[in-house]
Length: 341
Image (tube, rainbow, N blue to C red; front, side):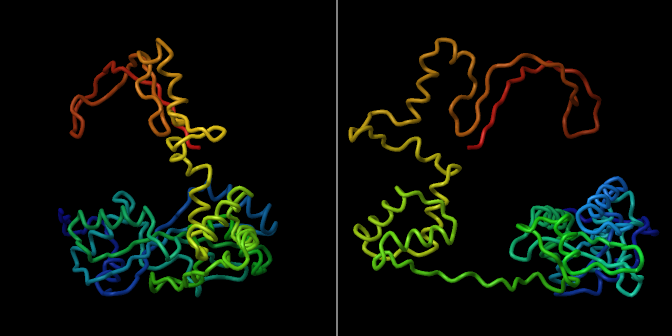
């Protein structure tokens, strides 16, 4: 880890941000940066909002909010390091300790909608940010950092967006699978989500009917063969009721995306086992092509393949990782193909 040093003028760092961070301990604090979106992106968002939410929306503004969970107190130098990192070095004046969309400053027809990551998991952005903080000498002082998006929406005539319109606008700016609407600034990353209970499915009592009902209820995509197989497996061979968790896991394993294991399984045709598995049969086309092995660099390796290419002219540094001159090289480039089933 390396600590950063700053000159006497603190390189334009926000004193308010430093003060907020220095006084925090075991709490979530917010720092803000404007704008979140470019002018062109905001223009596009405004047009979508007018078309899909309300035609009398006249303006949309944005800012980023950095929610930082301070585990242990930061000293002045550590606080300056955080501010310098979040300020993106060349525009430190855009980072501030107070939102430009404060409730007290809103006028008639204006409202703020904030969306951000769900509490139940840390995002990739958080993992990178925490890792960078550690690399700059902060240790575990910041345990979690998430970035949320705040939008100020202005409606003409001083009208407020209805609850339904607010929900429609939120749908435009977040992914409901991984994000949620923040009704108020975060004070904690603790999740209030209660895990669904594990339930037994009464296969021993109801047989296939129980599987058909849970299949419809949970969207497991079992076909008639699957239902017959699992009814016999649990009802006769194992002799107990399956749980909803087990059936969900089986549904995922049976999905087209997850059936890679199937290709190397034992293969029987009309009751007779074949020496080769399905993957061997498919791959045999490569072995029977006299020119294929000379041309194929990667073949039948998970979900990708590559064939021999040709030399290309490429500009690259003479010594990567340092400040150095560039020169042309002529490496051999292969054509790659990747698929997901």
